[in-house]
Image (tube, rainbow, N blue to C red; front, side, top):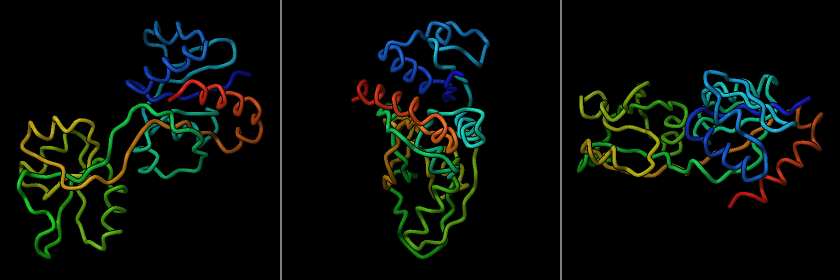
Length: 207
């Protein structure tokens, strides 16, 4: 039975495929996938292409043995699985940002924070013993402070260009993010040898 790995569609998928090719796996089926979502990689691996949150769901429920997902999704979803390896790509940071020149921490009023990551935001402000109202946004969170919906945002920042172009700036960085390899808890016991051998190969080819 092939090891089944769920990959986050998009950039992490491309970076993971690059890593697997570097390890000597034939990824031509993934590179030429069309609309297919379950694809063979060499003789021993099958990849499943999914959205980040679904990667975690598939791994948690054991329909995939392994997954590649950003640390941002791991922190936000806080599920039951093993986090095995920092793959070193997909690097960015969680940040608190708002309108340029605003003094976010001035005064005692309750701040409103717009974010796609309510759990990350809540945990961050709890550590500061600050009361905040959190508004969940699905699209461009940068709009929220510009429209007066929030005092600031908690979001992923890679280069900061989008913030600058919208008159926003980083007030504080929260934590670094990168792609991680995660494993289903049962698969880790039943297929330990295969998974450990794959981890050893991965570690030889990253960094």
